[in-house]
Length: 313
Length: 313
Image 1 (cartoon, rainbow over the protein chains, first blue to last red):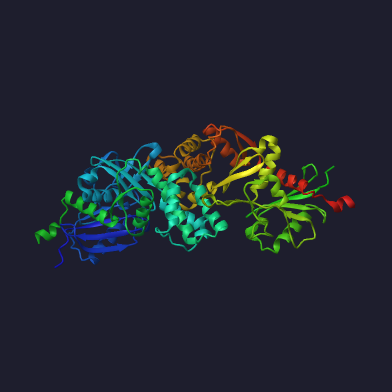
Image 2: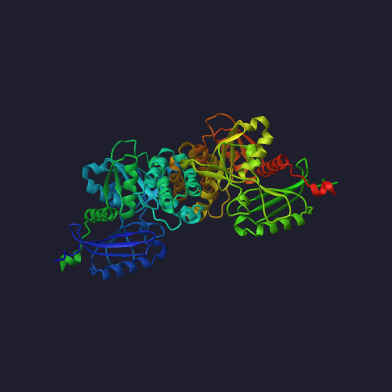
């Protein structure tokens, strides 16, 4: 028999919406995904989109909801203001904000802000993956360096359960704009990046070893094709490898000597696994979807969100 | 009285065409510019475009022409094959190729290729600026490091009159694609980069000092605007400054201790002058238009190109 859901967990980003109905123990009862992200919605539309997905998933009208991501930004449903660093993971949950315009209990988690001029940065959504990953890694998760690759890769440092600093690298976006809009577009046309190609590992090592030459390395991809007839597949692997290699250099991940905690799914996880291996850094992995779900479930427990309608029925 | 032209000099690039009628001593008699670059022309169209501009400039039907740039690429009028490194500046001129389909003497200068897999690179057009700059700097020009900023910035090393190596940085193109197609588009919207803003020099120093963090520094531009209300003008200056700073780090220009020879015009010259000053590197400057004209004139002299029609008339 399927367990009854105790609450709904939502990761509501810029371009995506993901909802899970979760049992008391965190088990997935139902799941919904759509493209109804922040950029496609007006402020008034959030409550309706949420209700529609809850109903389609079979949730009761009293099921409480916990949300992370851009829905809590100034342009979202309601602003859950950034917490300043250093921030305890518990502080994030304690600063959840109630969403208006709904009869349900809906709480939105805040993001984190690093208010240092030279390293001004914000995260929103990744802090919840971090909460999830920290529960998975237990006591060891309270100290460490976390890598969350993506369009904007996030590197987060935690010390004794506090987030002490983070950095965003525009890795995925740089890859996309160079592949689509630069002179390299012809060079990599139609090719997928294969993380198992030797060209990928070579480029990661070169990018990590000499990151100041990044845009020179990128241009050399075209030169290699012109002068040595390299394939678009190898060119795409090099484009990705140089940019990821530079990111790994910037992160300082080889300095501590410890394992990096990699929070990623699917193709991105495979790429970064291969990249870390190329520079000899060991990783502890957790799936990104699982991490955000674990984080939202942990928040729901801390916030004592339970389906009181269901319990009192 | 205007001097009679001895030859025509043409810099024929990917997206631009520039023609000068030059006197024996290199003085400019007439000038033409248009957007009829390589990408807008079929192979058969080159001769006609050249004739039309020569006629409009008042050139005789026997005036010889020397051309540099992409007109000599495989996709151009006729291929003037890349010379391999190390190449003497004189070798470039000696390997000029006669253009077909015209009754005039038209010679196209070759580019240079660096056939080293990890640093595979080509230049076409900049080698002629280099010839011009070397004539200007005299004996001192035979040894040194040259910077030719642009969409694809070129750094060239010469030793005893030979080009021993070069590197292309995608500086201008990275700035353009990030300003137009990335999340930073909103942050810098409508702003011009002012090389005199403190934000520009700060970003050059930061980009030069920690180039591995380039894409993190770029993302921090948005964070600064979000958290500290920085203006689009300062944001644009930082975007340019970080990318140029990383280029200067990659070039190793602070290592030799000598002056860098900067071949640039207008806004680009001002930006790089300011960037070099920010990291304490001295420069010797030559205007890029003048350099290519001097280079073409030097080539014409070496090739003994003179208007024999005119002389025999």
